Image (cartoon, rainbow, N blue to C red; front, side, top):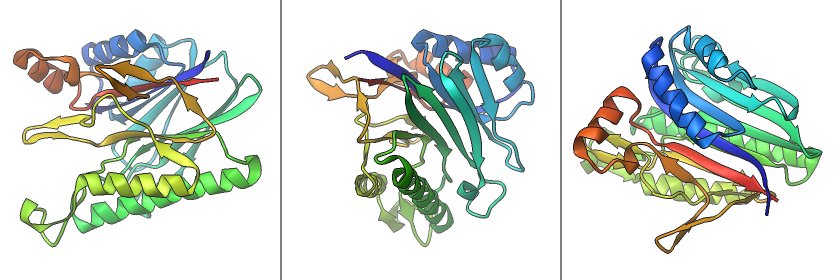
Length: 271
C-alpha cells in the first residue's frame, strides 16, 4: 500500500521563545518529515514565527485565547482545500483550557480531518470530568461528520491525559479509576462512532519523577488504514521518538529537561 499522508503529534512542554530549543524540536520533526503535524504547549509569542521560518513549505495555524498554552498545527501545502477551525467547545466553559484545533484538507480527492486535542490534566474530579466532556465533544464531532460524509475520515490525536481519577483526594489510596481504565473507556467510546485507538510502539508516552504514564494517543476512523510496523514480534501503527529511545540515563535526563517529557507520535495513512 502507498502512503497517502503522514501525521505527527507532540507535546513539547512549555515551548517558549528559545531558538536553541526550537531548533532541537525542528530537528526531530524534520527527521520524521510528516505531512501534517501538531505541537502542544506553545507559550512563546515568537515560536510561531520561528516555526514558519523553519517550515516554509507548510501552512501553519495556531490557536488563540485566554489559555496560556496554544496548539500549533501545520499541513504541507501540496494538499488541497486546507482549512483550520478553533473549536471553542473543547474548553468546556473554562477559557483557560485549550480549544480543539481542527485541520481539514483534501488529498487525492478525499477529505480528511485531524483534530488535535490537549485535554485537561489531573486526577481530581474536575480534571477527570473535563476530559470526559472533551472526549464527548470529539466523538459528537465524528457523529456530525458521519451524517454528512458517511464514515468520516477523521483522526483525533494529542495529549489526552488519560491518567485516571483519584477521589476525594489526589493520592494513590483514593484511586477510583486507573489510567488504563480511562484508556479502556476511551476505546469503547471510540468504537461506538466507528473509530479505534491505534496501537503504539510502547504504552508509556510521558516520563515524570515518579515514573512513566500512557497519556498520548491517536484515535482514528475505521475508514482509514494505517501502516503497520513490526518490531520484536509486536505489531503497531504508531511509532514513537524521544526519551523512550535513550537508554543512557544522562542523555534521557537531558532530553527530559531540555526538550520534552513527552514522546512524539507518528503514523502513516495508507491506501
